[in-house]
Length: 149
Image (cartoon, rainbow, N blue to C red):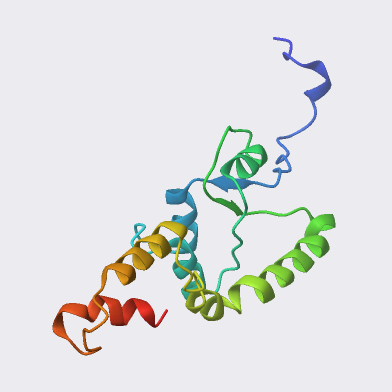
């Protein structure tokens, strides 16, 4: 019987070169980082395990990498040898800007700035407060706390 492909008659099975893989999805990525279920928030898990991570604006940008509309997480499992230098530079920049400054960024969240509705509400309550109330009066604890900000 003649072989189906005559060009491949004398050749054995050669392993194919696998392309670089991007793994997508929260459950898949957390399985790659730690073989347990997703219990903690992903940046805390990556910080605990020493894995570099970066937060990107918009799920659509990550979805473009894995040929989907949106994607929440992406992990690199394999990298081409010619792209390893560029990836190493990117990982170093990410590590200095995100991973090493995790505690600093986390503790300075928000800046303690009230929104316009809260400012208007506090100003309204301050105007209604009687002027002759002593500052330590039990009924004006809210006014004392709000005036310090």
